[in-house]
Length: 582
Image (cartoon, rainbow, N blue to C red; front, side, top):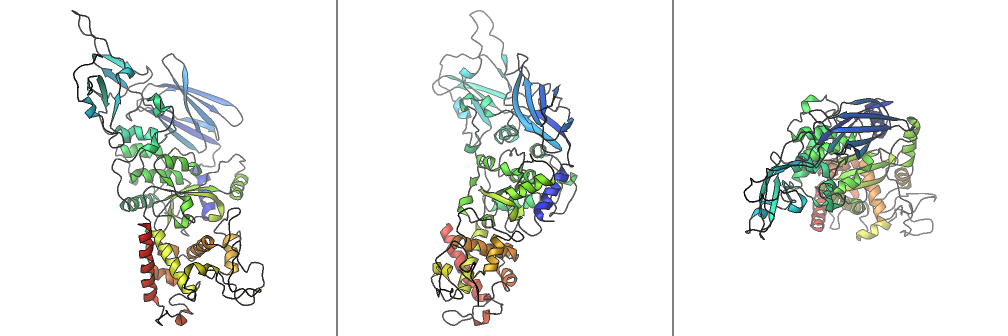
């Protein structure tokens, strides 16, 4: 069974071949405290249109009792009761796994304010209490026109008692923030709300921004945002430097592949915030075994390594791209030949291609099966999600529209690939000193007598009779290898896009790296173990040190092109690539 088939099999087993699902719902307030006594209604609509309605109130932990035996594929419409006794829709969830856990975060809190004169007075310094939210998001300010302030008492009467402002009577019980009042530099009154325990940005605000089912959003709290997410403009308070952050991310992600995380990402992250995440409570598994929870594991690793605040709301992996961008990642897909070249720390999002998707729909007899796809973190030598592939790479033939996202990263693996390819061109096409022209070289002239080719739409020997050698291009790729990598269903490693040139400089580089991968040498190159890589490639490129044709290879000044020379050449080209990057 292939890695992709194994992953899908485990995904379905992880869902226990579900005919029914269980739905859990939890409500938190603005500072991450559970909301008790919240009246709500959940309407489940099955694919055949039948509905089931549950009305209940949350317990002391903000939970509804689990709702079981729900049809797979149902949609849950979630509503809460407002002050007028009417239900208001706050979000939806799709039941596409055996257990769906949703956490809703409300921005509403109870604020108690003492009376305060609205007229202008002496200038104050209360504005000094309001830092930039990007630098210190622990404090938010509320202008007087956004809150109720009791008017001053008439002469001879006692001042009005402080009024507790309840933003909703259906809030339940939660902690109260600290209120600090004063006057700004112009003498106008201003109230500042400070969180009274912990970091609300980490506990709840980040959860809202990260879209924990988006039941409530910042738009409910600050209408001027007009419903637009605010994540893109926010950054970590003290982001760790790369590549230290990259190494921490990879270490955490790798360590997590050894355990079976049965809790949802929401639950795990909530436990992390409270300091209660304990790996030892989870059962162990081999790192190469997938449980079908790639999105969950990547979510957890990114948060655990402090690469993101909050986490992504992912019904499945293939839809992660937009949320990664909103969490500060950049889409760098168009700057790289393909995911093999991704920097360490990059996050890669995959969609099944049409053939793979249809195969799974047929296998599970579900024509509405979502395109689950896949997501993983590119490490120095691997791809990490809830497992690491046994063969050190995904099953490329099953995927399309692969996107690469970057936030914290180490480019050294990519630069090593470029330097190694330059060395390989030097060894395979030594007679041509112009590196750019090496991409047009032929080992044997074409039947028309040409010793170089200018048609990059396909391999120059494709469809032609080969009497001697069909090796061509900068890496002297033969037609059989070219066809196997691009077209053979059993060995395909690159899926060309429509209209893409199939043997230009970019494609030759990609094919060469795919060969490095197939020979299990790519991981060694990315980590800098060049001597090991050479040993693995000696039967593929016989010009390399230690291979049968290397004894005839000499430098321009007659010195042997041995391992010492290769290492020196590699370091020289790597320095060039590092200068370009700088």
